Amino acid sequence: MAITMGKKNAARPSNPPADQQDSSPKDAKEWYGAGHSRFEQDDFEGALAAYEKALALDPQNADTWNGIGNIRARNNDLEGAIAAYEQAITFKPDDARARNNIGTVRAQQDRLEDAMAAYEQALAIDPRYAPAWYNIGIARSDQNDLEGAIDAYEQALAINPKDAHTWYNLGVVRGEKKDYEGAKTAFEQSVIIDANFASGWSNLGFSLNKLKDYEGAKAAYDKVISIEPENADAWYGIGNMYFDQENFEDAAVAFERALEINPKYAAAWYNLGNTRAKLKYFEDAIEAYEQALAIDPKLAGAWTGLGNVKMESKDIVAAAMAFEKALAIDLKSFNAWKGLGGARLQQKNLQSAISAIVAYKQAIGIDPTDACTWNNLGVALSVEKDFEGAIAAFEQALAIDPAHDRALKGFEYARRKQEGLECYSNAENEK
Image 1: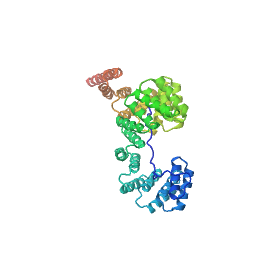
Image 2 (image 1 turned 180 degrees about the vertical axis):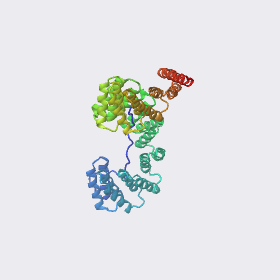
Image 3 (image 1 turned 90 degrees about the vertical axis):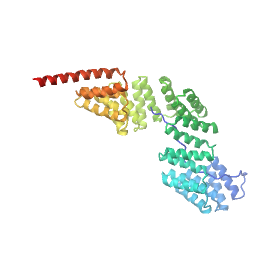
Image 4 (image 1 turned 135 degrees about the vertical axis):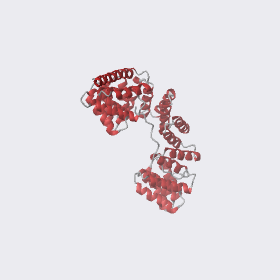
């Protein structure tokens, strides 16, 4: 199943606060205030015009240069934004805000080392500047330093515990570490602060689902839908929740609803394919997997799912091709190696059993705890008349699952064959 947590919020610049202004600005301070108000209302064109009025009256105002930089960054004029922030630093060398804002632009340019340096410069000026700690958390997460990201977010929250987005990002990182209890706590804090934070509710649902609190998860997803009725991620989460409870009919309905909202949702198509396969609607499952792959041809799990359904449909050649596609994307896919072993074994040509043995051994190298794979390896080794190896494989299967009936039968068969070979060998030696 493709079950993913929502993305963290991106690095964000900061504007200095402004006093409330009347509708007729008279000086640079009031023009700056008007620009700030328009920026907060997403009127970026109006904000820029007001900031330019402010600069005409006071060209050395660092706050105004910061505001202009933020608008340029919004307009994807990243070098222009850097130039504005540098002007702010020229006129106010101890401006932590401008250095933080330079960091956010460098992060947009995927220059993470430069971004980190800028954030650290901001903190050298003001160690309690929470936005810089927040952005360091994002940069460390992007560098896969999850512990460092958690530390940075916690530093930000020690300074400003009322920031919903910092709690949210902390929850995302804890979820990436599979600390779902910690993630739940963080997402709960995010929605306590902002009751209409749809992403916070959605990821709270994800965490509760992972903790098998299905009633709580459903309530969280329902809250998302009450805020944003056309939120495809919430319906996707509901589908995953029902799937985990093996309620495949309702899971299919939820995934289909997600796809009505967003027909390009590759993960929803993939999980709909998994759900239809569980319901044994194999042709419909194939359609869903193919839709997923048309959107995202690199979705290895969808290739594996397609291979499994092709196996059920007895289209063994197509199944093998699908498993090979999955492995071309992800060589560490246990399910794809296991599926390829099954497809090769059923092709029943001169090299098929040998190819199956190779595939099963690859799968076991990834996960040696699956009894079925050890059993299948035993079967393939038996086909190759390597009964000693088959006996060892069946023994491994039975050590994992003593009640594995096929492994027990395979073990008895291989042992009889091995004993027969030994008897034949002894008889030959006596001649």
